Length: 245
Ligand code: ASP
Ligand code: MG
Image (cartoon, rainbow, N blue to C red; front, side, top):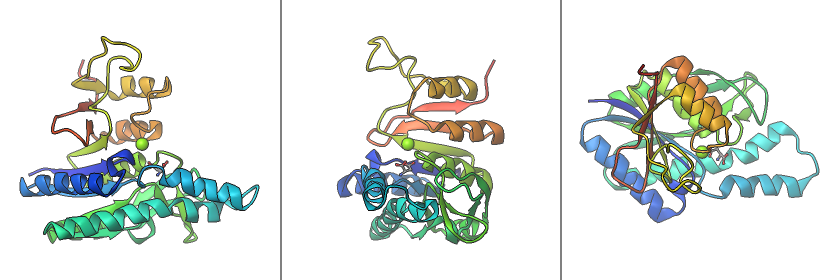
């Protein structure tokens, strides 16, 4: 039995059929005997839409209220995923950042995680319940909702994996893994079975968008093995870990 954090990005949750596919994937993993904690992003396009609403409201938003609006997409995904899993006979429960709590500093819009309380998540796992966590959000020390910067759900996944001492953190996306070169530009690009944290950081800083940069740094610092894989295929992806050499 492995304890795994599984994070699903926006395109994996693009519509209800895709969400159902994701729920089936989670159910399969549970049936195989794994302990799974799920982290979800907002459905595709949702966060951009919320950002748009804020821009339309006033020229310059109060950042604390901006975070209240921007964090809403993940709440919807977490609730829907828990509903879909329950419908498949899997016990599941949604969690928002403030409920866990995932405590952050007060840099609203770009907050840093200070602590993830593992207690409620571990209790769920012990009771055979799948916790479904809204990514990208936390709560500052005065109780205000915060967000972690765009693409921040990856960061939630890594921080949660560290807190619950997970064996691995799977980052599900719309590509099969990490490639040697950009497959849209280089026809000989191949999928890598593994890559080191540092090489992955280099790719991300050169513009590869497959993983959030801060999340790779956090995984390296906390020694969390990552796997980048497609939510649309049954194949293994690319393992991101310490340098083998
Ligand atoms: N929904 C947020 C965004 O679009 C966070 C994430 O997807 O990781 O940036
Ligand atoms: Mg992302």
